[in-house]
Image (cartoon, rainbow, N blue to C red; front, side, top):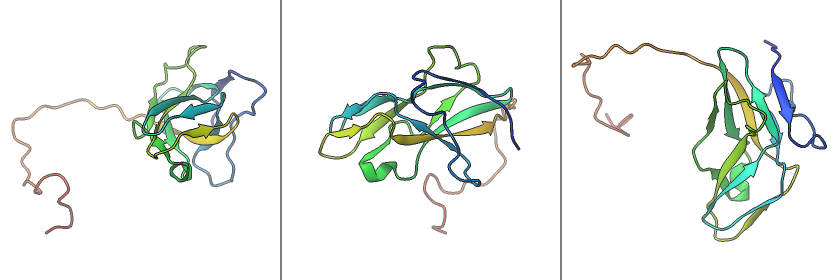
Length: 145
């Protein structure tokens, strides 16, 4: 399914994001500013785009699968970009944890994160006092029975 989304580049000398293969679920984002992240510190890396997903969708900002090889991981797991996070100054930024013992530099133009445009499922809550199900045994118990 192809859809049109509005996107703004902060630095137009960097390329528009693109899907790198016909089967890719996400498109890669380029780093706008060379950024050094000290050892064991969270750094903030600007990704050069403002994105407005279509009505009923959101932006999932996730690491490219090779990011960990650089000694970095998203500090918050992955980012959620709401549909209304699309003002002129709402640049996507990666919060990255340097889990190594040395400083790491991310260069301008590096592709470190990707975006997957995903549908939003809104729910209505029905509060109950009893779920009516047996307990499974707590967090981390799958496969222990």
